[in-house]
Amino acid sequence: MSAVKALHVRIEGITASFRHPLVISGTQISTPMPAYSNLLGMMSACAGRVVKPAETRVGFEFHCRSHDLELERTVRWQMDKRGRLKPHSKGQGISYRQVYWSPCLDLYVTNPAFRSTFERPAATPCFGRSQDIAWIKWVREVILHPVSKGNLGPTLIPYPQSGIAGTIVRLPEWFENAMAGRPRKPGPFGYYQAMLPTVGDLRVDVERADLFYPSDATRQNDVIYLHQWLSE
Image 1 (tube, rainbow, N blue to C red):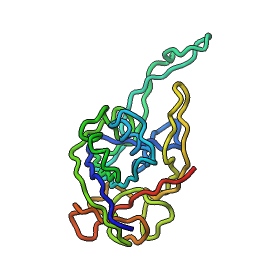
Image 2: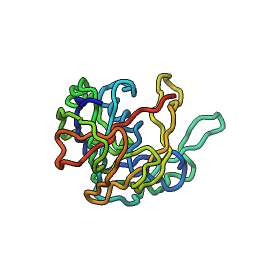
Image 3: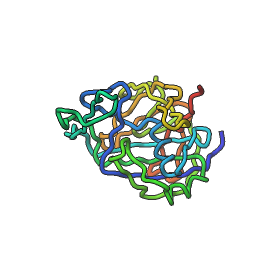
């Protein structure tokens, strides 16, 4: 495989919370990493349209300072006799939400045409929910050189991957949102190992396919995993 031209985009924020797909009620836990569908959602917000997997491959590293549970006031609703929503008779509620503090996302995009999308975003990208607003720190062009092994930082890697500790999660690749007024339709689901993003500059020696050395890496052996989208 030859070298690949790509964009390296630094995105930062104050909070991040990536809702776990198997948790509907109670304490809202977060996956340690954004799903690949989250990355497409952030790109879609910047582009002002739906960005599809066929348009680009993506890779990323996700770091944050710490994580904890946050108290959140919620607005509860109930149905009236006519089947319409109205405020709940017991008023507002309180819930817990797992939050990652000071998130930092290094996003790699293999389609350089997205540069203007990140430099002049159409809408505000978010680290999960709409209140977890993010901002784009900078965008630069890089060359990704294919390698067979290297030091991998916190990311979402296909399961199983030996030598990496992390939470095993099952997450969608993308969502179809073509029909107005209808729930989004998830694409294929994949099993991944979500590495812990809070342990300083943790990197792990990995040998596998789809590893690349970015031309702007700070250390010679630092690599990223460039995701191969799953088929339907």
